[in-house]
Image 1: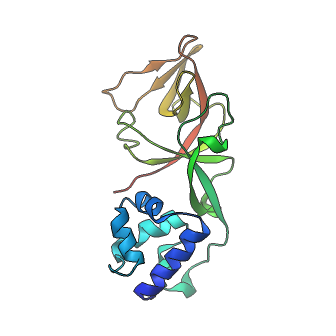
Image 2: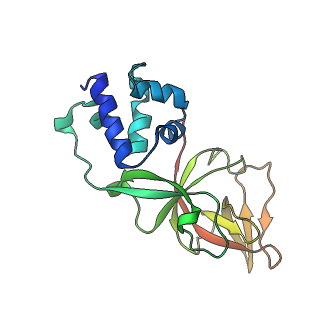
Image 3: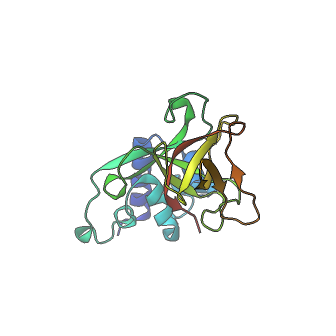
Length: 205
């Protein structure tokens, strides 16, 4: 097993390679910047119980990060950067630079095919399926099947929302999973653009 200094050195190398600042790393692992800074400057011991969170954000296995049983671990050779979208400029391609607020690095072997991006869920309308703050992996596609969860963009908005799609004849209805919220009926006066299909949800405990 690696020493505390070796773990921190490896973390530092990974974040610099991926151009992730300490403040961005702290935000992604849901910790304060001052605490994470103290890990890197040696004032605090790195917490082994949070190794999984740091490894996930930086695209390595926990065993690799800590140096555990490396002879039994299949090395992850192919990593890919998946964009995290924020606001979406009207008329621009979905993955235009101005729409991207950051990247998450993941092993390519465990990802579905197609163009992928992440959205961060906001609000409670899709609970309990998707909790507020969850990261949702979206496969870019212009249509989804009935009952699938889609990332949709209202034409008068610049932020995608997640809803379950249902069709009744020529009418599309966007259904929340939380029954406290009302369905949204898509119409000529309330048009939407489907950005893609939700394929995976990551929630911090």
